[in-house]
Image (tube, rainbow, N blue to C red; front, side, top):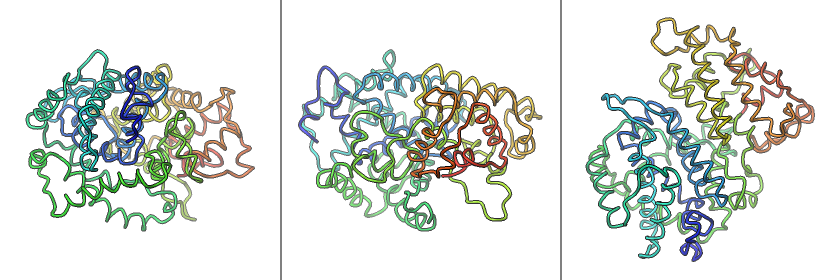
Length: 487
């Protein structure tokens, strides 16, 4: 860790001179985020929110990616980026409420739960340094804790706080681990699925069997490392046995990540670099030093534009169409791949709310656009319920959706398309033009479109028409087919 980072700045505790600003951009901080998510999920309020109102059951990797991106925004050099992200988190959390399986109410905006989120990130950062052989002396540890206190104050200015001193923090942390954390379903979803869903890097996109084989070997090892780093009492409560040899593996993993940070070129050890190589949907900051490392490596994606982020959300990697296929994606396949965000086999409001949240997160929408988007999705859900939820149970099956999808063109779905067009049309000229189209492919798909394709321009009306066709699962063509159906 650099002397400048260790020194920090009193005037701006989360700025470029802070320890957090540097740490959250190092690849090894991915170990922090992963471990912290497990500790968060064991909290009953957070675990219930994840299970019932999040895409994380079906897409745990997405949850990790968004955690990393959000943390980096919260320590961005530009204070406006930080404030915007804090406001976005507050809006997102305020929409996640409900009751867990035992009838206990939960609220993602609960101050105690949000304080625990920041506490897990701090404690996991300290654990990372300790296991990496990096000593944090008294002043450095005090500085780091003060930065996390500032992090929470930015995220929740009128709510919960971390204990005022480190001595009190460690008592608080031990108390929560022993008295509040539970063996939640969310913990096991993370441990069972997170590393099983790491996207294939670009070089292996066309060789899924090779990537699947490598992931089958590396995934259990990565899970074992996370488990071994958890508090022993919590492991016992979660029923997680420590496999012999994993403690040595854990120390080797942490030490090697620190060594890599010291001996390899900085551009190679940036978290942005690694995340972008693994997941093109990951969108690093557009300003500051986050793009410096990316620019140093030829062929790496350079930050996803608004249009690229939007369209990547709507395009889980499809299976390639065979010569005999008459469609790229059927309505039923579209239902399972895109609409069923929570992976429970049904469409209900949490699915559409999760989709709206993911779009807002990827595109970093402002309050007005986000409110328009959520309102349009809410109206669409009411339309779907009225037309398709014949038994009134508050959910829709894939068969019900596929049967009626071809005739869908309700006003709410059109409004969703209009919102998406507005945020995708980055120069506000009412056309998705060749420049935006080429930028989309270069940033989101690492591909230069042909001259003919690049010359096609999508007007608002054409965008809406093709979006409705996409939502119905019908065959697409040309630019729109590429935008939504290709990985």
